[in-house]
Amino acid sequence: MNYWVLIGILIIVIGFALKLDSLAVVLFAGIVTALIGAFNINDVLGSLTNGFDTALTTLGSAFVNNRLMSLFFLTLPVIGIGERYGLRERAMTMIKGMKVATSGRILTFYQAIREVAGFFSLRLGGHPQFVRPLVEPMAQAAAEVEGTVDSNLEDEIKGAAAASENYGNFFAQNTFLASSGVLLIVGTLADLGYGEVTASQVALWSLPVAIIALLLAGVQFYLLDRKIKANGKGQE
Picture (cartoon, helix red, strand yellow):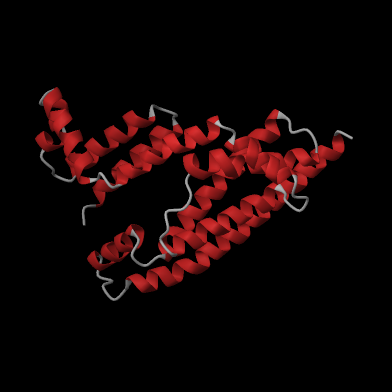
């Protein structure tokens, strides 16, 4: 195996650490990886050197071949219309009427739902579809019940809401044995001589990881609740 192709990962890490332009870093890392992997430079830079028509052809072919992935964009206008007509406000009003709801409990519950959905390979969740219009406003509303939320605490709640989505997606996606991540792991291990590892084994051992991630996130969100409560008492 040519381990030099992994230099693309190093380039991305260094580029992000130096806070360089993300798109440029990823593009440069891809080109370097392709060159080291002995791909034809014309294939790598084809869309850049053969003119605008070639670039459009490449983009069009990729769009057609992966058009099912583009269905994601159809949800964005729906979310936009929902927000325009008060989706966030309705979610906040509903949460403020629930005395037992706290920011931490809402985020923990959402992550649990996210992980269960991942176990059944249901594409439930996402930052634009759920976190921004529903989860984050609900967490903010629950925090406002405790008192005024300053800008720093508001940002912290936004970050925690995004984290609940990321935790649930990242740590639970491999619990479904036919997910792309599981297939990638099995294929890589088979190439390295570990062909006895099956997809069901990878999915099985991913379950405790998802549970541990949920527990640790629960602790994080519980500490967030305590911080929100302390902030509310400080304003009394």
